[in-house]
Image (cartoon, rainbow, N blue to C red; front, top):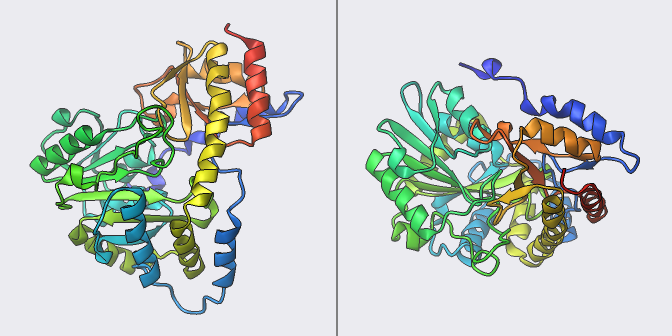
Length: 371
């Protein structure tokens, strides 16, 4: 198949519920897609502005300063010391990387691409793009022969689940038995809510406790969209096995996949500044502390959601019925069916709305109560 054969964009199906929510007297509270609403930190915006004389082509591999910043960030924030600079490259956001990685790795018909059962849909899109077979499977023991790429997502989107070191180690071991590349999408790793992740670092798949210091076949993907409010910058990166990163870099050079030079300059500053990340995490914690009990008061059960940017909720009935009920309250969420076939009764509720809008949603949910 090709790009033209992909299904209609799924969020178009939510439009009628958005229209209903907009008719609420106090306006819509959009908790659906999860696009950041808070301002880009000034120190990062200033770095972008100062680098706008970008007359030369940027480096696909990333500027030397950016590659060093990524390496230093993994050591400081993710517990991954001693990455060589040829083990990291920037990407144009993380979605294009997720969609294109099967292509960049040379996968095709007959190859299996494993992804989580509750999964961001782009993992499957990337497999279908190269006529590989997508497979939703969480248990490494169930990953079949013929698997060539395994996607992990920890913390998960939509469900906020975290894989601990033991689970990551088992996944790496099984992927190596199969001769598969294991890629972990870790872009919510700074957002831990429930213990132990409220106080402990969420582990990276590149952590020496997982890999025993051997990066062979293992990759980590990360995005600055959420923790730094850089979704509009398209600022992300890939790290891991230097041999695979070099192969991916060669393909990206041929395809012209290079982050703009001003964005690269802004990424250096964002990666070196921890204070703005702490500020943003506190914003999301405050909003979660309002939304979670309000949803429970309205009759929803919150599953997993121990970390990340979403609450994974169900009231035990079809997700579209729950979406309609919330739309009556002026609240827009996302249906679980967008994230695979296994969760038809779940909805995903984002923390990405202003404090005022989240407070309004909380008040409406509490006033509504359980059905």
